[in-house]
Amino acid sequence: MQILTFRNKKIISVSKAVEAIFDTIITNKERLVTIYDAIDVDKFNQKSNQNLLHKEYNFSSDTKIIGNVVALTNQKDIYTFIDTAKKIKANCPANYPLKFVVIGNGPLSDDLKKYTKVNNLENDLFFTGFRNVIDLLPEFDIFLITSITEGLPLTVYEAFASKIPVVSTKAGGIPEVIIDGKTGFLAEIKDSETLSKKVLQLLSDPVLEKNIKTNAYKLVKQNHDLNIMQKNYYDFYKNFI
Image 1 (cartoon, rainbow, N blue to C red):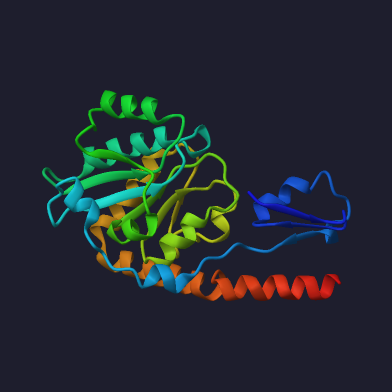
Image 2: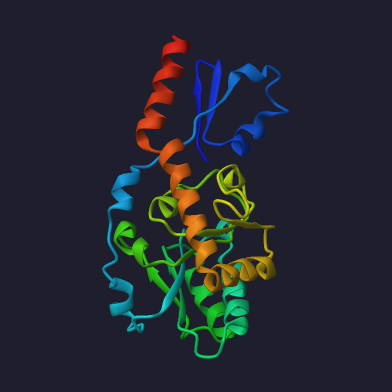
């Protein structure tokens, strides 16, 4: 979440969901402005798959990876990620080459690993710790977000730019960029059943997968590239001054 204030006259948020926090606080809605964050789209799009995760964890070359890049905190609800992984595995054909990867650190690391083992996923779900994300993203086949609360995470834009389809909860501002069935798939918070069904749908339908990736890339390139954000801030400061 990002909120910037200017002499108590303007408040800038990174999503409409963040802006909505002020609905009952700020009576003059003209003080509220949303300027979306952005990334260097080409930097992510130009990265190639180096199979680093496949080599490190000895995955077969045809293994699909469902992953997330996330802080291991309550807000991100990786417990639901694990629940979703369990349902996906249970509904995949026998011996389907599929693994789950969570990149990131956090205070819940040990608890999440225990929960993974309790659910008999210790050979299917891997916690990598902190890594250089841009080198590993091209290996993901699906980006799975299970957050409870969000502003609008940059990881969504990074996945779009890397042409990875995203399945996510409706946390925070995520529905402002993920249009269900067009630029990704959405589910209610903690709804591991729907999340798993959407992942399985993508895995079984290459045409749908391609359309989702194409639409999502087009959206991030047109609306959330760095040059777009720079122009939006330039216009804001120019008008503000």
